[in-house]
Image (cartoon, rainbow, N blue to C red; front, side):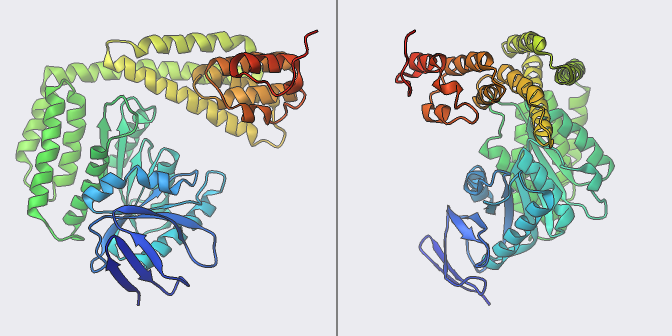
Length: 471
């Protein structure tokens, strides 16, 4: 049996899985917690400031497919503190590994966490952002102890593997400007038909990621669902306060001319609170909202932009495929024109146009990235097609320096120094300043000793590494 002693802000834990005593922080993140003595795998662990070893706690395993354990936990710490959840995140899951390898890493972290802290039965969950969220939603199929998923900016990783006899609660969180928004709406309809427990918290914001309150709302829903199932003792005060908070937010949406957001939230409230409280007044409010002219008009407008968005996405997909097949460098101007159009929509007074623009930009960048990954994985990499994709990416996402560097590197490898020089100047114009990275860039040994290369470095960054000899 584990011996656990609490003092000040530290939890000292002695367990048979570890050769040494563990020191875990309360109200802070403990980094580099070792999975076991025989493996180099580690994870970050967060214990709420009210953590007490004498009672079991709900735990959420947060996933980031770059192995950034502390960073991913940090994004949910405030919500976990507010709602009373332990957080854990692996430093070793990575998108370079296979799904099966990542599942095994996740499972070892689960077992280690359960051996370290008292975890409440039937209150084990996963969460993540983007690709990490998609992985988090796959895990319940392999690990039946997982009872719910909080997915930020991503739909279920694979609908086809879901089993209606082995359900889990899926809580999606998404900004209407996120390119995943429509996919998550479609996924919700599928989950509803499958009678799969799910909610979708939708918000509008300049930031794509949700604020602390929205993430905390998702955690609160997990708690309320546990009460409805009988896994947590019923707390009528918490239920009443939560209901009031959700209804107040729905009313704010409705009064601030966001009736669609109000409707989304009312639907979630009905799902969450139906087993807990009487909902006659809510159903009346929902019917009234859906019959209102403001809701009907907003719904028509949003659907109209959805349709326009679908046509544009088809264009992007078609022309990208054609450009790759034919190495159509001449079409770079067309991509530039499309981005200029989206830039105009960004300044539109119409909310739905601004949101559509953001979603389309996210979609095309994701589409390009998928094609880059696909071509890069081929045994015989098509350098010309790959280079064209990186060129397009400099147009669709000009603030990202990586595609410029890739074009410079790939063009140099193909001895196309004119193209490499052009993209070097575009990179430097955009504010790039990492001179050491530039002089160590792969495939550029011959390019970076040319006078033209060093003249540009001297012009924008000063102090070129190689002497410029005037002819």
